[in-house]
Image (cartoon, rainbow, N blue to C red; front, side, top):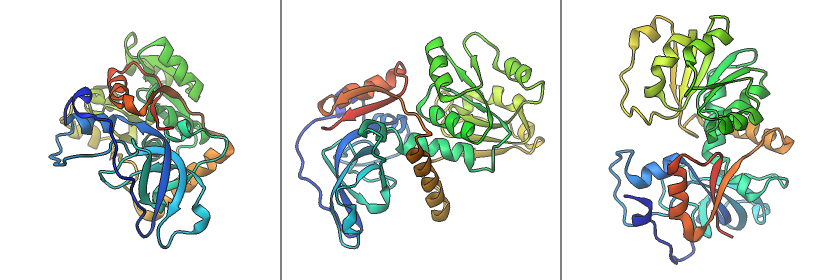
Length: 319
């Protein structure tokens, strides 16, 4: 673990073989998420011990071989993948062998680069927006509207006829959030977010908050969340171990939901992925690849993501 330039190496390894229930995917792209750079840098504080790990969980490619028990019809299938289990064989490689149910059909109209954007960002967004009940007719605040998760969260909310308010830090990021469908955009660098949200909602506040930085944004979230509202948080970076304002939230009966992609009951996860696939096949979702790098440039890709300057997903091209 350490800085990208110090610990990421490019070289040759033996190709994996699919075990029973697995598929071998010839990867064309690998998607990088903040969780990948946090793990690599040691920021998470998780005491991990490994001599070598192939990074990244998300990617896209074509199934070239199958293990026992997998239908032969899957060979040749275009797929987007996510390594749900904490395994050392990630997607920043030419091949990955992984469980068949972690390789999802990629519609023909989507590129492999777009497929690499889906794993953590789209599933996290779906969980954050949809897991605590219907949002039709509700008003949501989606924090950090230019982020990869927020970009999908805005779209999922709008597909359910919700009203979306989002926050950004620049005009360029505001335009990005607008393309996703946000109804109102607040620049948190120049505007008071609490005041603006209450103005936009006639003092009522919001039904649900999709939160990118839980600890840092609690002073904003507590006064604007409605009674019986939901705060669905998927990260807390600026304040890693926040102090929970228990009674201000408890007296409102607020649900605080810590979101982790794919960690849910099997039936619920299958229904979620089926719904996402329907949205992908219909062309209802738009995707933003913010930067692309070649596989030998993976360290540069990590540094680009860490810089915070990229709008959209950072993708490593394998082929």
